[in-house]
Image (cartoon, rainbow, N blue to C red; front, side):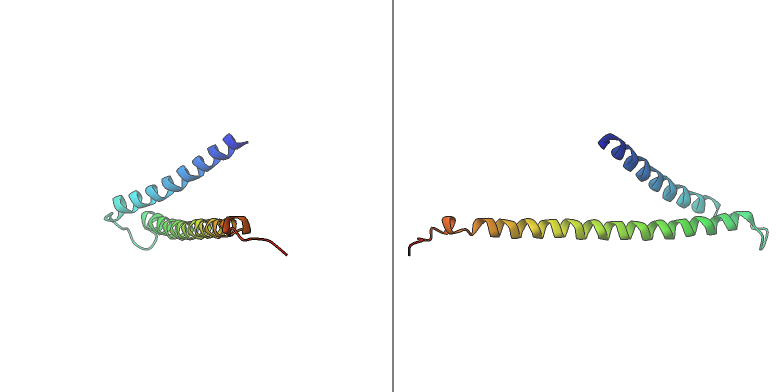
Length: 98
C-alpha cells in the first residue's frame, strides 16, 4: 500500500511539473506568431495555457501554505510536549511528604 501511494504521489508531481513547463514553453514559443485575428487558434491556446498556469500556481500556493502550517504545528506540539515531559515532580526533585 505504501508503494502505491508513493508511486501515485510521484505521478501527480510529475504531471503537475509537466503541465506547468509545457504551458510556459508553449507561451514562450508561440508568443510572436503571425496572428490571423479574433479567431486565432494559437491565441486561444495561449489563453488556455495562461489559465492553466494561474490555476496551478494557486494550487501550489495553497499546498505550500498548508505544508508550512502543518510543520509549524508539529514543531510547536513537540516543543510543548518536551516542556511538559521535562517538568515532572521527580525531575524537579520535589519532596512529597505529608
